[in-house]
Amino acid sequence: MSILNVKRSVGALLTGALLSANSFAAISPEVNELLTKKLQSLKVEVDSIDESPVKGLYEILSQGAIYYISEDGKFLLNGDIYDLDNGMNNLTSAKVAEVRKASTAEHFAKLKDFEKDMIVYKAEDEKYVITAFTDTSCPYCQKLQAEIPEYNKLGITIRYLAFPRGGISSNAYHTMVSVWCSDDPKGAMDDAKKRRKIESATCDNTVKEQYELGVALGITGTPTLFLEDGTAMPGYLPPERLLQVLEQKK
Image (cartoon, rainbow, N blue to C red; front, side):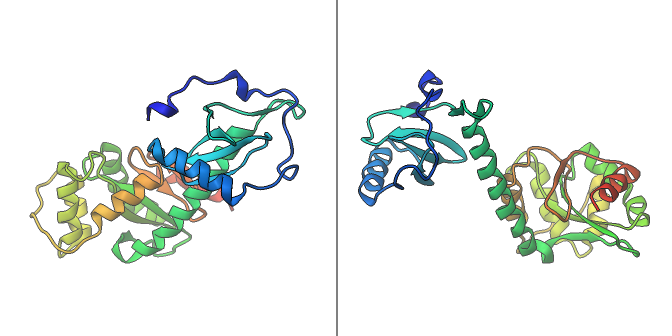
C-alpha cells in the first residue's frame, strides 16, 4: 500500500523519548476509534493498535509488520525503535519476532486438524514423528520418499501433508489430489515421486487446505519438515543426519 511505502524515518531512532510500556496509559477507546477509522479510510488492514514504547506514538500490527502512528492520526512511521539505554536493542524487530513466533505456534497447532488426512509411513519402533510438507514434483521430496525405509528403521515416522509449490493451479496440485484420492495413497505417492503416471482421481479432500496451512506457516519450498515441538526445518536431511538433530533436541 502506498501509504506504507514511506522511507525509513530517522525519527524512529528516538533519543530520550523512550518510555517503559507502563509509563503512560493504554490506548483509550476514543483514540482507538479515531486511529482505526483513519487507517481503514486508507485501506490499511489493521490487526491491532496498542501503545508503543514512545509516548505519543501507537503501534500498529498489520499483516505481520509493525508501524507507528501519532495519537492524532496525522503521521505514520515505518521504521525501527531502538532502546539507546540498553545496547541499541531493536524493540521493533523483537516485537515482530514475537508476533511471528506466536503466529507460527498458532498455525502449527492446526496440524492436529489434518492428522486424519496425512499419508503416514509409520516406524515399527517409533521414536520420533516428523510432519513433512511435500510436493510430488520436487526432486528432494522424491529423494526423501526413496529413503523412507531408512527413516523408519531409525524409528522416525514420516507424515505427509501436501504443499504444491506452484499453488492450486499447478500440475503438482492436481497430481496430489489424485494421490490423496487414490484407493492406495501410499502406493500412489510412491509412484508419483518415481515419476510414474498415476490414475487421475477426485474426491472430497483437503489438499487445498493443507497447502494454505503451509502458506500460513511460512513455507516457501519443499520438503519442509516439522518436528514435534514445532521446529521447522526447511529442506531435505539424510536419515542419519535427521536422527542426530532429533537426538540433540531431547
